[in-house]
Amino acid sequence: MGLKTRIIGMATAGFVLSLMASTAFAENLRILAWDGYADKDWVKEFTATTGIGVDVVFIGSDDEAWAKIKGSEGKDFDIYAVNTAQLQRYIAADLATPIDVADMPNQKEVLPRFRDLTTVRGVTKDGKVYGIPFCFDSIGLIYDTDKVKPAPTSMSILWDPAYKGKVLAYDNGEHNVSFTALTLGYQDPFHLSDDQIAAVKTKLVDLKHNVLSFYTTADEAQQIYKDNDVALIWANYGQQQLKALQAIGAHVAYVNPSEGALAWLDNWVVSKGVHDKVAAEKWINFMISKKVSSQLSERTGFGNTVTETASAGGNDKLIWLDNVEDPLKRSDIWNEVKATP
Image 1 (tube, one colour):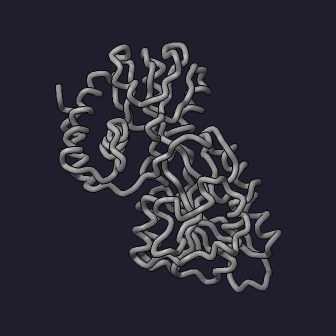
Image 2: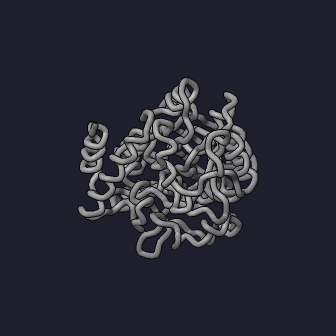
């Protein structure tokens, strides 16, 4: 999932959900996924309609997913879920199998922005498709509707002196450098030159002077909001963070900024060790159906690639997370920013 901490409940790693079926398929599909991506009722319906049994192993971090797939060279699973920022790593390690999109009729019905996979950064290589986009969320801006009027349209409002001491920011070097680069107008926020990095650092120091506090978890941000006069939150946890605040009665709304919102996009990938590629592609096609996709958004708050949701309107500009030029350098810069008086 996308370079961030999940706030939906995680199943214990290694927990296995198994639905057996006596079918012509020799083995059950072996799926590695995040909690919320293979719910029991979906598995049951898939098995009932296709005759294909399913075993699901849930994971709780990108590192755990990599360890499980790499550890067996892809042989322990037929399908796995991974975000676009990580997928190229799997492709480079020969852990993914090209997907026959023509065998997935539901891909023709997805939202326009996900239909032409050559335009979705990170899911193809050398003209071959390795990932089918499934769900996403943006990293936008939450604002208090009583304190911020009119509604903001740009992240630049975080630097507005009118909100000094009323801004909550996320404690993460990579993401902060990236979104600030977008605010400065840099087209590629993940691969910055030394001069661009220096300009971002200066801009972040200015932001720090407006920030009440930095948070790491959604719960922490929510508590700070309850106990203080907060007007703006850089929402690393997206729509889920918004829903949690609204659930406690906060008068807040959400916007994806005009300069572009960082966003994670998770994909279904066929493993290099797939035993039955046809069965694997049937699963992916089933998961990008309108019914399952809509239910996913209702249950988790994430956007899906088939039906419109609150995560992003059709005209919102989303910048899919990518590997950055130097993670360690970004971390060092962020620590320097926080240490600046």
